[in-house]
Length: 74
Image (cartoon, one colour):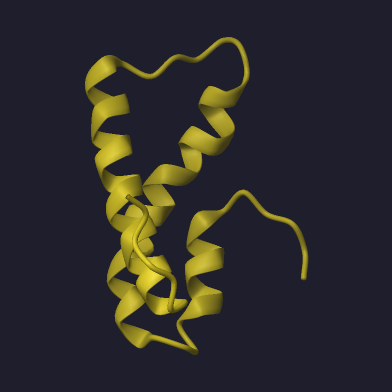
């Protein structure tokens, strides 16, 4: 399996286990830029975008953990 920062690609791999995760694909795609663009010097996310990304990330994480049969994180 190739390494990737594209979170939507990782969601695509989980669709075979739970098709409802397709609803998270666009959210995961929006999070990808935080893994790449804002990782290096030069671009910075605003406080508002950061807070929105964190909320989105938590929603995606909860659903992926549910799909994988993992307990929610405290």
